Length: 307
Ligand code: COA
Ligand code: ZN
Image (cartoon, rainbow, N blue to C red; front, top):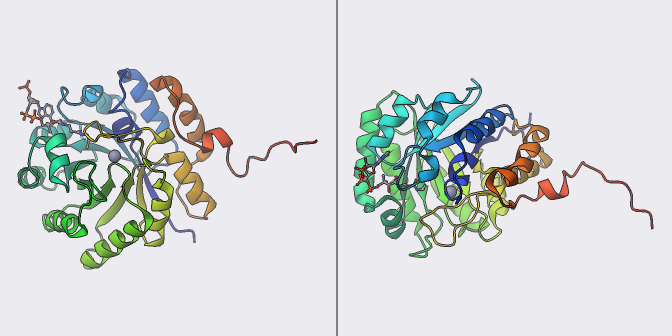
């Protein structure tokens, strides 16, 4: 049997949040509804952040209310604080994705708190949510911080263990600005698996950006290390507004195309996904970095060139 990979599409959250032009609510809903039919395990729909901080996602409640939910897809939302958790509960999100950075400088820029303040505030959120909604915690800048440089693996483990002890269902280890390389990913995955060997149900996800062209190599290192959950963004859109020089997430359709070619089961129908990626440039008003979209799939043979 093919090994199952669980893919989380983050284009309407991570992808859209740094776009300059507001994307109309209706268009967001249409895109999410179409993505819901492609076979994703999870879609990160939006974030319940401050509308002043992330104006693009100020329509989060309306989007959550109006999307058509496919029972086979989990609809998750990013939540930075208690107020966000209250809004996410009202919106009946299937999962809350809490976020903090493993580097002090990025946490201060992104969340306006020290890491210790964030850790305490998120513990309060976890207590508040209780068993009403499963919780995932995303640890940003885990493979390096654009302001501080190296982030020691022990620092990532410290926060990972803190949240696992608080009973969260999953952790996402994020390379927010594409500083991680495959050997580092292998070390990280091994360290996580050793540390949480007694937590067989813990869902470990990897979240890469392709800022330096290492995105898919990092996915491969993750797969080879036994990770089965990945985030990606349609077209390769994305970037943290609080990380200088940040660029897009790994491109979902490129990653899925690679995993399919390797014989893994992503559950995703590329023939449905590629037309959505093709529409994305019009939606955001600029080209997107995805490559399979430009070249076609490996199997899409062209007419032989006759000289
Ligand atoms: N949802 C809606 N509004 C919120 C909110 C939330 N989750 N959290 C705070 N606010 C509002 C407050 O009500 C307050 O509004 P007011 O000025 O009208 O009174 C205002 O935002 C400031 O609140 P405060 O608690 O002082 O927060 P802050 O200004 O320190 O902002 C964050 C902290 C984390 C809420 C904010 O910086 C944020 O949302 N950042 C986005 C982080 C992000 O998504 N980054 C990219 C992904 S990693
Ligand atoms: Zn990201």
